[in-house]
Amino acid sequence: MAELVAFKGVRYNQDLVGDLRELTTPPYDVIGEAEQQMYYDRHPNNIIRLEFGKIYPTDTEDDNRYTRAADYLRQWLESGILKKEEKPAFYLYEQEFSLNGERLTRTGFICGVKLADYSERVVLPHEETLAKPKEDRLKLMKACLANFSSIFGLYRDEEQEIEGILRKAKDEAEKVEFTDDLGDVHRLWIIDREDVIKQVQTLMANRPIYIADGHHRYETALHFKREMEAEGKSGYDYVMMTLVNVYDSGLVVLPTHRLVKNVTNFSAEKLIAGLKEDFELELVNRVEINSDLKKAAEDFLKILAEKGEQGQAFGLCFQDGSLYLLINKEGKPASGTAAERLDVSVLQQKILEKHLSIGAGEREKETNLIYTRDEEFALRAVLEKQCQLCFFLNPTRVTEVTDVADENGKMPQKSTYFYPKLITGLVLNCF
Picture 1 (cartoon, one colour):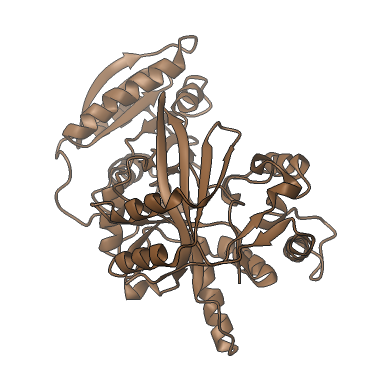
Picture 2 (spheres, rainbow, N blue to C red):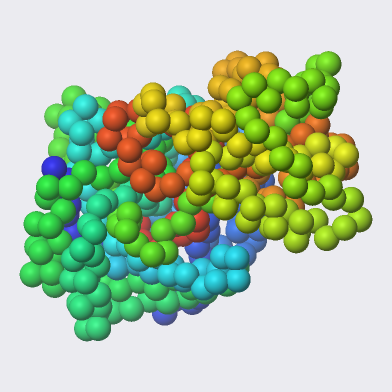
């Protein structure tokens, strides 16, 4: 199945540029214009200039965000700001982070993974992709011949043999550590022992890899490989991935809640009456705008989580502050595909489409929905009448992600949010 390779990663030379906090960023697709400028201002060698460069009105075919990224990469390599590893390596990567007052650590390892068509069932997706982001990433890859950010992949190893092998090897390995803006601690060990690499390769050989995050970048790399092969060029068969065991105690998926707006002729009373066809409704609380909304939202999500363990449940908030639980009368759906049984799918089909006429076209235009992971923000937006209502969800389980991928299914938009995101700029892969 999966074919892994060690590679000579390219890393920042901290003797020249200092703290990695000043040089790294979150993934490009969660960075807005203001954050982009902040990273530009933070350090002249910040990875933002490579991964997500600015666009200017004066850009041309010969001078644009992609050509500038290639120029920066060449200059930084020539000046020693970026250095290539002397030996091929795997990179053991820990992210220590806070969630709900608890300190957690997620462990993975960075490696090269041989590109395979989805039909080969070696690398498995769970979501559809869009053409525009792939076009952008392809232009960057062609200009720079590099992976600047890592695709996030999952694998199954219930005995945790692979982590055990890598952890034993880390004591004698070079270590890099820094703390980012959120207080998350990033630790990287450069594992270049050939025997350790071989053991991991052997253990991974019969396991598929599930894409958690980075579908667009994976498909871009596959497209680029095919283009190069058509031109008779080789050496583009692998893409940089960070692989995390689905049984890792620090693997977290957060929910993405749905704020609803601009629904014509909306009536809360009519919606409640319609929802009673498929759901039991339970009024849990009524909150005021001047109350502690953070606590109210957190308490509501705790109740929602408990109900979600017993069956399938959703949270609902109206502008009058009423908080309802919606409990599926069927319990947890037992029929249909893994994708159809997901909470997000049931919400989409039995509520958004059926009662609010928010179908595929409306979702694509994003005229009626705002997606957020911040439950306090969601509650406030409804109470302040910026939105008409909000549906709160429990997180998608990791096993549900792998079940959908195993069936060759696709999840609805915004079904998963793996937290925290992988940092960009820790290790680069130059072809």
